[in-house]
Image (cartoon, rainbow, N blue to C red; front, side, top):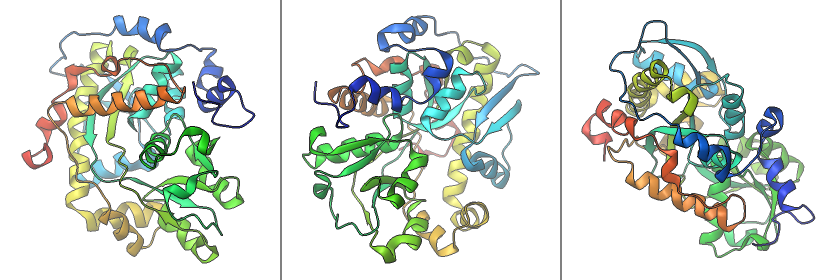
Length: 354
């Protein structure tokens, strides 16, 4: 096992700080061979109902109201009641909400399901949108002389084990030939990254493409910059707790939601001008020029009928985390509920399936 990625901080303390409040609040802990494995055996394999029963409702995550905006603009509806749209996006927060039973379905990257499994909470992936272009870049603190990933050696890097930003960082380090003990990983959650950069607590933090314009607008004149790479966070997915998917009515509602989720992303991709104004300008307070810059980096939605590529990538990610001692090794195929595998693909035109 490599040395602790944070000098002076033990492995257990480091992992606990990154796991989020979920395990502490719920009084739960454990590894992949604990309760998650036990719950997996009880996961339903019953055929999905073709119709959502009357009275069914779901609590769905919609970070920054993205789903509501896409649904409204595209004229999409779902055949069940959304009892609550939760403004939750970060993986640790989603796991928290899953544990508290205040959330039924969420949109995340590939790493939160791995982290949930490690914590002993069982949930399944039900839909996947493959991303081919990088969604994240690396921002430097003001006044930094860092210009390449190779320059990360010896520097303090913001790291969130349970979020997409974490795996993007680990993959970038591996590609640059840097080991964990070549850098100083500072455990934070993504909503702390900007403050950490501004204060100089870290030298580097991964930021979403949509965050970079505002950061540079404020700090580029003070020497801050961004470093782009070709490291991709491949999976944009929907996932839900096994307890939700074992409920036939809720599982049917999840299956009915997936086509709308896929169609909403296709609509946004096909109507960039409207989406730039209605989302980025009106709700994110970006200029139209900044919004257009983000759109140029946007991925074309891809809902493959088969999850083979996604499973391979997810296994590589889990193995990468295991190499660093962040999780235990396990077979990620247990994270996928194949009853839902081709639903998204069937909902979109052929050009968005390949």
